[in-house]
Image 1 (cartoon, rainbow, N blue to C red):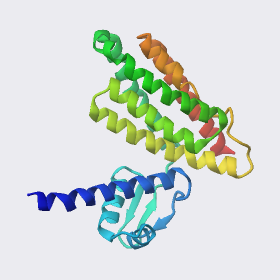
Image 2 (image 1 turned 135 degrees about the horizontal axis):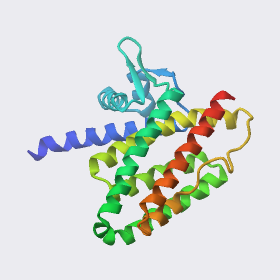
Image 3 (image 1 turned 90 degrees about the vertical axis):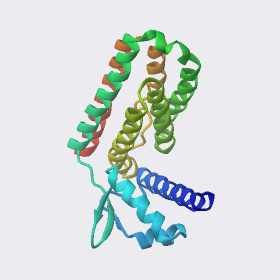
Length: 232
């Protein structure tokens, strides 16, 4: 019945908007690992009822970004370096599957040239932000870059999983990156990975081995950087 679909759709949209906003708060460092809050506090902050807030928080908990405490509400999950290493390994496995499909079925990717140009533009923006050390802009474009790329080369279930995994890996990494840069360690210019367009170019050439090598270098660079900052 039309009368029952409307409110449900509105509530679902509001729940997703709140979840996205809170995720961005975590990525921006305004909600730090271990920070606690309640449904009531978030509802008052956004001026909405408790129901969509609770649903959003439960959703973020299922994604591993928050922890639920039955008596104290919710808190931002604290990831470890071991978590980060595991995320990078999982990301590599998914990427390898995408690139292997390109090698085994090149004909199925002939119609993706125009779409890859769009992905490349996202990569250009991400690379510029990385070179400038602009973490907020980089995260946004990097997530869009990998979401669009995985949509082209992977099945939708793996694409969605990879997106959530990349969000979690950024949440883990950003804690160390922001603490270092805002704590007087220096700016991030030149320290962040910026080979997005090279990866797209390898895929345009149908060079899965080249794409694999770039991703391996990316993960090694990311792990080395975060381990170094964590130790510092």
